[in-house]
Length: 66
Image 1 (cartoon, one colour):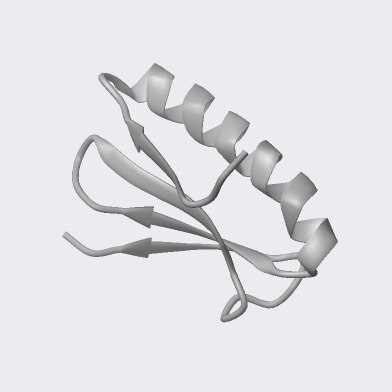
Image 2: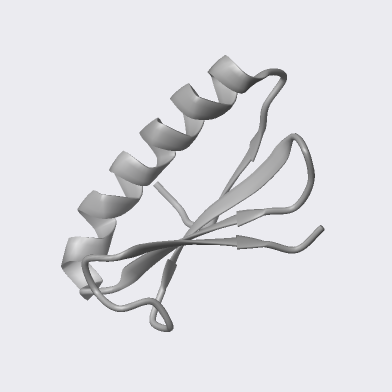
């Protein structure tokens, strides 16, 4: 799986389900590089999930840019 993952969701339920799945996948990859996870909201329906050296290992941070 390549990061960042970009998600476009259609409703609240799919947002929760897809973000949970993406963060779970990111956690497995974060262990390898000992990085944190950054979830960025770009709009009401668009998100990215990425591994980040700026986020301490073991943490997930949220950021909004809209």
